[in-house]
Amino acid sequence: MPGEAGSEDRRHAPATLRNRMAIADVLRETLPSAGLVLEIASGSGEHAAYFAQEFPALDWQPSDPDADARRSIGAWCEGIANVLPPLDLDAAVGTWPVAGADAVLCVNMVHISPWDATLGLLAGAAKLLPPDAPLILYGPFLQAGVPTAPSNLAFDESLRARDSRWGLRSVEAVTAAATSFSLDQCLAMPANNLLLVFRRR
Image: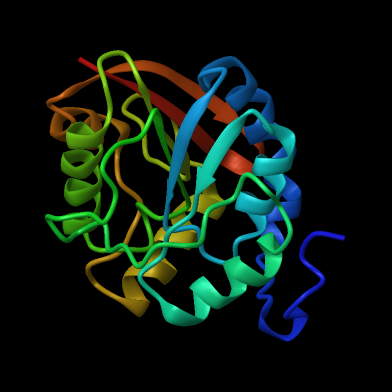
């Protein structure tokens, strides 16, 4: 069974089980039929293992700057043929160790990282993606004209207390920074999250 080897290295992100099916439903309509998906900030690796098996015609490239996370990714994805070894990739760094991609996915990173990481994500994805290819972001966001759920406001406060550089970003701020992309979709997701689909111009 995939993921049995190195089980002691496997981390668990409880939100993964709650959101992976809803995200996969959107990915089915958004990802190319074939090619390479680069996942930024893959974390535990549970998403990579699940999505790679849901989309066997795609090659999945997980990444994370944290060595323990990369070990967890490797453990979860052991034996899954279309998952590549996880890359040591920090979104905020200007040079990424990958030559190109047909889609870029980033789940639950934008709010738990400095703004520089989001800017780096947008710049890095712009270098890798061909025209019209998707950059897909998932997580809690603020949105002009839409009341923010009390749970998200409390989450934002707790994030900023942990690190003043963290916090929920607005859809408008991310879109304004995504100068090489057009916002194609902004979809409401479970648990007061959003999924943003940007297309490379």
